[in-house]
Image (cartoon, rainbow, N blue to C red; front, side, top):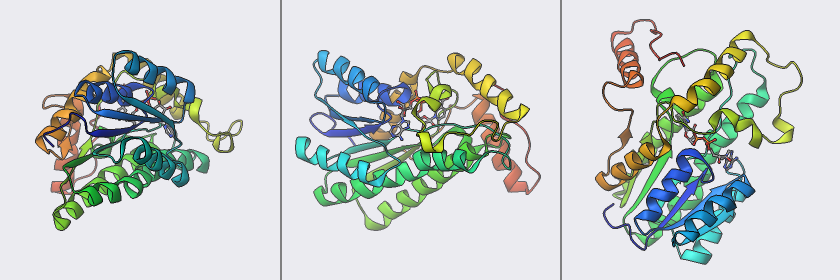
Length: 285
Ligand SMILES: NC(=O)c1ccc[n+]([C@@H]2O[C@H](COP(=O)([O-])OP(=O)(O)OC[C@H]3O[C@@H](n4cnc5c(N)ncnc54)[C@H](O)[C@@H]3O)[C@@H](O)[C@H]2O)c1
């Protein structure tokens, strides 16, 4: 996609971290930005900041795990701005734990947001993009988790592998349809965001019951992620990377060559190519 000014972008997870940085980056290109997030207070605050800087912004409180909420987001987008040209399916949550001990509610919560949330976004916005026929682009936020191997975070790793795979399907489908819709899968390494505090948005009915799924491994990962995220890259770096990929119509948006997460991805691909057993290669947080 080459022309951004005056076009409409929709970003989920817009109140914090990578989503908020994406909104800033897209607004700086003079796009009209629809900011969607489940956390109403933080969303309005982020939207007000962009408005105060002179940008055209619409904040829509949205729970992407619910199909009705995402179709209402699309309706509101059409009502206010006419259509959508860029969709960043970015909101996501994290849960740690041993694969067989983590409660079903961990899987339901993480899949509801990370996988069904992305699918709901596609169902609501791809038809709008196909209908207007102008240049458009979809960025799905997966993770370097999608292309690496690690223990104690199966719900998250599974969900990101699903987003990665769904994005590849979508890309091939757009090619098959000769649609003017580009697709990118954004795979961040460690980023300095609020992801380790994602429990703040976990719905009451999906909260863990006392003692459920507790394990030393879960505690270890939770503590390590909380300690490590402040050492991650600035979310603005990921926004710049995503915008460059939209401009260049590039699908795979990975951690750069030489980054330890990229090396871990190379090791995994080599494990698969040689059909050897998985190597533990991800950087310890
Ligand atoms: N931070 C990292 O190290 C990292 C690494 C790889 C991938 N990612 C991915 O980046 C994306 C953005 O996460 P982040 O790191 O900026 O975290 P963040 O917690 O700072 O931002 C995520 C946003 O998503 C929102 N959200 C949560 N549940 C939602 C729902 N049901 N509906 C709508 N919005 C919801 C939150 O309110 C929050 O504003 C996620 O998909 C995450 O998995 C992050």
